[in-house]
Length: 140
Image (cartoon, rainbow, N blue to C red; front, side, top):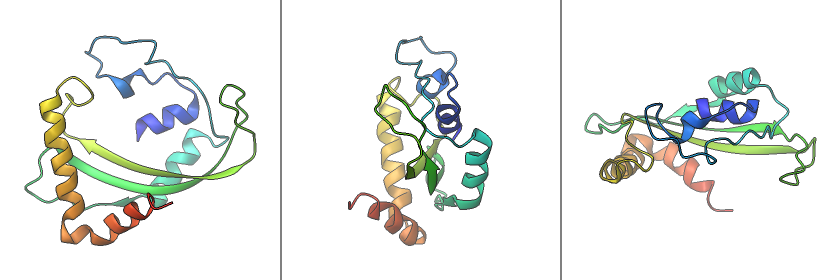
């Protein structure tokens, strides 16, 4: 979730796109737009309160965790994106924590394994309620 906090705090988040030892592909790595009025600390506290977790089966090795939550946030004026200040929005977050640093365009073989493991987690019977909640997000 660190990348979400960086976005909300308007800080440089190049680590989101690349591991620290990867080749720099800027200008894509510098997106510093604060979109919400809430502070990073407030968002982190809300995440701790509202985030729910998928159970990761023992035979899944490329996924450490999958967490999800809906946070209610307030927009901050941003002329670049045409965002008006003061609008309450619901931000749905599905955070997949991978055990590999190679994901993200640097190793597509690992990416296929990661996708298969995400599907395996979501189809596990212990995650029926969590999967149902997340899938409903895509209905509207």
